[in-house]
Image (cartoon, rainbow, N blue to C red; front, top):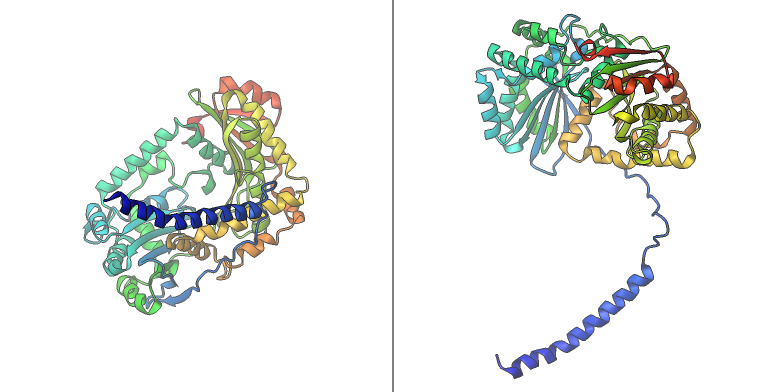
Length: 489
């Protein structure tokens, strides 16, 4: 290229460069003039409105209720079969039966082995899982819409026609027994089990883990699982939830083909888990674990069922106390004192009243100090909550709630909640408004009713020799010590 041609190009570019410089200077001036005021945080806008698509409710020929929600953002479908039976329905001599039964569903079903089920699901680009909680069991399928029909056939086999092969039962039994044995060496695993045993007692269903004990696991048989499945896994005791790029007209024939021949025999009447007797006096239990790297603390008592009329005041109350990173417990134990990586609290709401608990893993040499700060916050929550802190908690809940519906998996999880706890169809649409309607007086009343530290059980899992003297000196309540085997049978 000649020098003249190059120079000509540069000369021609000069007006463009000059215009660009003027534009940049003008933009900088405008930016300077409109720069945000950083002397204080920006004010929050109104909480976003959550718009949940309408639920179209249908019924299969055998009476199985079907809930369909059309979401056309991606060509996927989520299909959840919810069984209204869980660990709360375990026989008194077979704790862990519902959990074991659900875990065995995809270990062989129909004419398929466990390996064939896994291969068929993978070939279809799908995912299939089985699960169980205290209140329900479920089989969940996520699948590209183009593969929905064959995937439903696999799902129906798993849910309706499990074979409970002995070899798989023995393998899963050993896995669970090994996990239970390993848990006894981990203070963070022992603490929730010990806390449940202290609060509810060994006879109450909530006093034992959903998976049962070593004794019940060893005694569990295939016949027990078959009987539980035959009695509880019935169309009259289930809800089928479908969301994604589907229409009721298009998907109902596929569902009828897969689930319509499910026998219609009625399930036995469900006996609610009895409400546990509430604690009336404080107690401290140290579970001795000499090898523990930290002390694991759990504090609380019997809480409330999911049906409580105080759900929203308790939601806001717990957000303030221990339900968020900026909660009082976390700010005190983590940020101010550095005793813990994190402290929290929660109400475990089930069909029957679960536990309220505050929890943290703390430095061994700071166990007594951490307990003192826990009780400071648990007692302090009884005082009136200021307007700013109340607004902050409500905004935290309201602004984060729509994010719980980002995917069809999220959506169907909330629809499961509606089905299991018999919530109205408008429940989640009105959720944010109900949160914002909570008053300081309602929070204070809930705190006075449900947070009574003088009656709480305290469970500390840790090195007894290192922590007992300090904990005893606090004189929180009468103190006893137990071994790991006593609280995790």
